[in-house]
Amino acid sequence: MYANGNALISCCGITLPPLEASEADSEHEVKIETVEDESFITINHSMTKQHYISFAAFTTSDRIQIVKFYPEGNAETRMNLRGGGYLYFYCNRHGLMKQKVRQSRQGGQRTARS
Ligand SMILES: [Fe+2]
Image: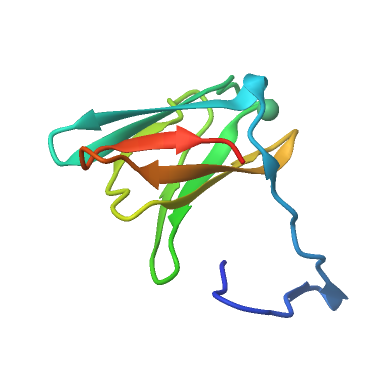
């Protein structure tokens, strides 16, 4: 579930607090490579049933792309990162993280931590 603004979300009558994303750290490193006209994103992280990345979402001011990952799979996907924005991803042990993605001068993407 996602919202492009303020939202009040509850489960079983309990209001759920919003998740605050922390900056991606060295244990949750994101690698972005240009492949054809898209970007190949790899999150270097454990993908066991006990510790895994459950999704990645790329957001801009007017778009969102979400990809679900599964334990024992790979935390990698292709996305169109046109325009730059933020890549969010969720680790089941360490929570929500984000990394800024900027458009390079050559038209490809590069990442920058802010
Ligand atoms: Fe983690």
